[in-house]
Amino acid sequence: MEFTELSLPGVYLIDGFQHVDQRGEFVKTFHHPSFEQRDLSFKVREEFFSISGKHVLRGMHFQLPPHDHHKLVYCIAGRVLDVVLDLRMGSEHYGKHLSVELSGKRRQMLWIPKGLAHGFLSLAEDSCLIYKTDREHHPESDAGIRWDSFGMSWPCDESSVSLSPRDQLHPTLDEFSSPF
Image (tube, rainbow, N blue to C red):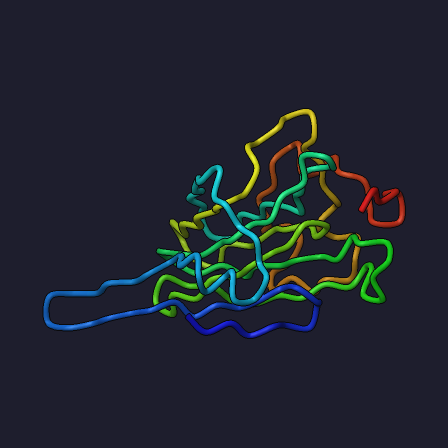
């Protein structure tokens, strides 16, 4: 596996092992020793996926301590613009974000450490994003930041974005008091 650290410390774009031949394709999405080599402690406790239509925006989500978690995400169908926002108070990157396109064709993964909000915009119909986390979902610890409050330039106009009622009610970054 190849790990490339991105502009926010601790966030990695990962190219997993792929084998393609006349039969099809084989992709390795997790290899514990590869994570251990980089001091990325990750014991998968839960895995889930979402399927989203074009211009569905999910985010910006995280779980509050002590139920915060590391997350590994990848797209197996369609395309998404995946976005992370740094909420770590001691970080010189607090309030900064980055985005990367994940797709079913490229097969890259994104490692998101604790203290970062995560969200994505589906760029195609039926985009499927898989999430692996090292903590179980804890509904009382669910939290989020409004998708339009931290300077991200989303590649569609606001009127075409489809959001859940919950995501519309998240506080803005300026209203949020970070526990990270």
